[in-house]
Amino acid sequence: MPAIEEQDPALLPQKITHICCIGAGYVGGPTCTVLAQQCPDIVVTIVDVNPVRIAAWNSEDLTQLPVFEPGLAAIVGECRGRNLFFTTDIDKAIDEAQIVFVSVNTPTKTSGIGSGFAADLRYVEASTRRIASVAQTPKIIVEKSTVPCRTAASMRAILEANSKPGTPFQILSNPEFLSEGTAVQDLLHPDRVLIGSLDTAQGRRAAELLSEVYERWVPKERVLHTGLWSSELTKLAANALLAQRISSINAISAICEATGANVYEVADACGVDRRIGPHFLRASVGFGGSCFQKDILNLVYLSGSLGLPEVAEYWRQVIVMNEFSKARFAKKVVQTLFNTVTAKRLALLGFAFKKDTGDTRESPAITLCKHFRQEGAHIAIYDPKVKREQIFLDLTEPGVTDDRKAVEEAVTVCPSVLDACHDAEAVVIATDWDEFSAIDWHKVFNIMRKPAVVFDGRRVVNPAKLREIGFRVHAVGVGPELQDNVWV
Ligand code: NAD
Ligand code: UDX
Image 1 (spheres, rainbow, N blue to C red):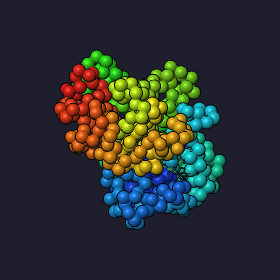
Image 2 (spheres, helix red, strand yellow; image 1 turned 90 degrees about the horizontal axis):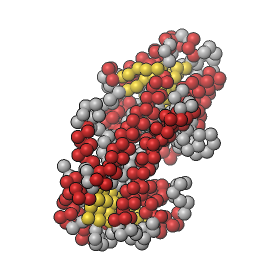
Image 3 (cartoon, rainbow, N blue to C red; image 1 turned 180 degrees about the vertical axis):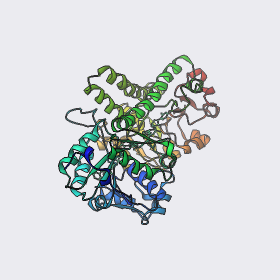
Image 4 (cartoon, helix red, strand yellow; image 1 turned 45 degrees about the horizontal axis):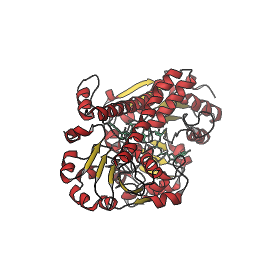
């Protein structure tokens, strides 16, 4: 089989009628659902090795989809069975498709070389091998997963060694920038769609074909074309820069608490400088989610393996600061409650890593629970979207504890805010759910033990109003004597 650069662009698919997406997770599901809605003439098939996940995507009851995103269920309802399909028949979907998105998970390695830092690419490799073994017609293979720089080269080596004669491939990098909780809007109105390709006739033609799909709903000027390696690295760089801003403002928030400055005033005043900008400067208990930590660790590993230890250490500090933020918040809770929370009931409001998602991956709430359990507290958790079993799974994962019985004794999952707050000594807000901004704090005050304390890790409450009711309040990034001024 000729090297891919030498192939004739005419051997690429001429028309896109079928798209397959391997991986029906938080990215593959929403991304290709929106694609199906915007391209009714293209058959979009989302496949997964996990039959339970596929069955959930096919649920009659649209509230049971495996991924909760505002607006998503309605689009699935509109397109499913028309030009959108969810199936475990991976081979058939690959066979029919001209474009195959690889949208599988790329978690941090937990053993072997690079353990704790490098991306585990086993699922990307398995998907690539499957495409090679099944494909009988030309395919454009699109890296949607977040991968280390030059992963496309490994995919190409696998494809070249395993594909059937007469089945040319092009590999594109098309990283996804959606945020959970706003995925549908992000997909409908992206700041940019990034397509990286080889700078060859076939590479450029493949990029054009993918671009034409997006241009059905994304303005052409927002579709950016770069080289493959730039595109792969951009995804890691973008996440590192975003997380760095949060760690930066969280570092400033510690200084604010110690000096009486107000981090919200500082962030606003810094953010009006157009060179800095106002976004992603919300001080918090710390960032969570499946991407930031994993992708920075990946960048740290990449830098280290390229012989750039100073660069690796620079990015590692973003994670160090995030761990410090979570630990500092937990310590504040213990110190304020007279240096002990042993046998005290703490109401933890929010378990998801941010509002409008049921996703708990790397949620700060997990770290808070770990600290509170070590201090002997009883934790009463309420989250509007996270299921009880998920909470227990997260609290017994490696690195937290393997003692399920002890966790069950120390943790109660409650059906409402009021249930969680009943007899609690303190309320700890870990997620910015809108519901928490509308809590009837008079009712909460009446059912709590006194002094009743609220620790706001997300700038959800109005401290002045709560103090009028009788609460003591701690909000991240605001020194004690200025806490009343936090609500602007
Ligand atoms: P996920 O774990 O929710 O979904 C991945 C899915 O791939 C799983 O359902 C899994 O069963 C399936 N899978 C794994 N190997 C497979 C195989 N060989 N064949 C078929 N299916 C297979 O992960 P996710 O959150 O959707 O993330 C996917 C990728 O997108 C990751 O690389 C991630 O870094 C990146 N990303 C995620 C987000 C996000 O917000 N979650 C945003 C941008 C990019
Ligand atoms: C992130 C990137 O934003 C997205 O572009 C990429 O595709 C995937 O990773 P996501 O993790 O879904 O998206 O959510 P994001 O809104 O970035 O929030 C991540 C974490 O940072 C959350 O825990 C959030 O609460 C926290 N955060 C965000 C802050 O603490 N302060 C902020 O100012 C912004």
